Length: 113
Length: 112
Image 1 (cartoon, rainbow over the protein chains, first blue to last red):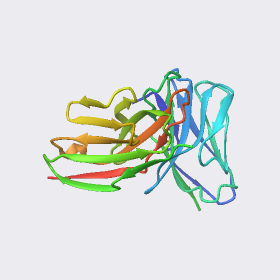
Image 2: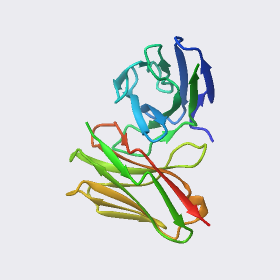
Image 3: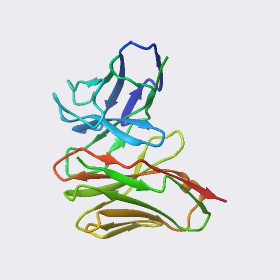
Image 4: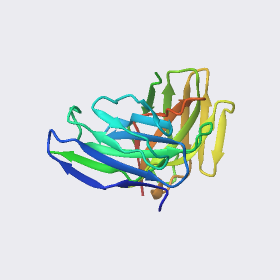
């Protein structure tokens, strides 16, 4: 199923290295989001963007950075400043209207060794 | 900011019985409450949502109720089936703000 694509599905990095997770959508959605999913902690918002060239910090933005240069793309960089980067990362998008369905990507499992 | 609490964290029910998952929220300005289902190894998908101008919404075997005064909302699944086994997340957001805050999830297991 298409719509919103995350790549790669699995990613391994050495401690101290920055890593960028890709998120692309062809749904013409204005809003895009990055969530982190850890066991027992649900989905926690890292960053979100409501329009191109604009984004806001979520609840756990420290150690992460994003860009929104194109409507279709919202890459997430996990920097070496993130203390516990090993997690499952989910990207989502939704139309810029009053509260409609958020469509999620398949996720990227990042393991830092 | 908004805080969403979800209970229980795990729930097992016999096939055919009903399941209820409850969530509370902290910000009285929240007015949109979706529920997402995440099957094992798959992405979360919206199953039902409710806005603050209604108290209940049904879709076949699934229903959601909202009590704005108490700031809580619940998911009800009737006549449960094995394919209902999944992790369910509630969420809340405020009109005009695209930020969606999720609960911690409930792992529902349907026992055949």
